[in-house]
Amino acid sequence: MNSIIIPAYNEEDRIGESLSKIIDYTNSENIEVEIIVVDDGSKDKTVDIANSFGGNVRVIKQEKNQGKGAAVRRGMLEAKGDFRVFSDADLSTPIYEIKKLIEHNKKGFDVCIGSRAVDSSMIKEHQPWYREMMGKTFNHIVQLLVVKGIKDTQCGFKGFSKLAAEKIFSVAKIDGFAFDVEVVFLAGKFNFKIAEIPVEWYNDERSKVNPITDSTKMFYEILKIRNLHRDL
Image (cartoon, rainbow, N blue to C red):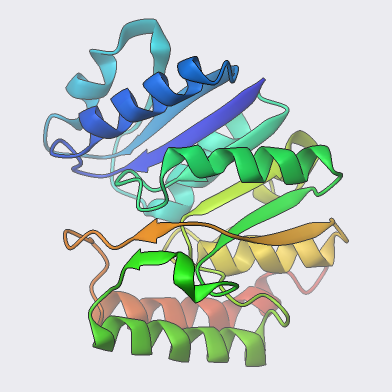
């Protein structure tokens, strides 16, 4: 069985459509899944909408907003699947791309990273130029300070074997958006077999990432990663 984890914070405008797409696609392809929505302290109707899907969706509610990293971590550790994928609630990477991750996992890859940078033609709707520039700058910093060889650590579409998920997320500590960098760093630290896989990606203009404040927080978070795990 596969697990699909959706971290969600105030996603009432998108979560229903995204869950319908996931259910319809996995049913049509006979992909056995459990779908887990981890609500990160939403103040809107995200939980009510997710719960309306009944037994098709399991909802885990964080009582207060802790950050995307905290939500993904909880979902990964409470999931039951042999392969566990997290996806952004807006499905910027369409759910049908999960097949690529599953196929690579079957080939022996423990950590499967959806990437916009391996093949830039897969970006079907681009971000504004300044966001793309900031993303590339961030990745250069990540390559220099934390993780070498991975072209895109920030795409919100990654899959983990059960062993990798439990080992990585049981020691991960970053709650904010830089958690992606931390989990890729830990995957390398634990010598898991990693695949970076080109996936389709469509920018959603309703992104909740603030290019100034969140980028600053992410920079300080990546500076802490090596120190947080110096004893491993």
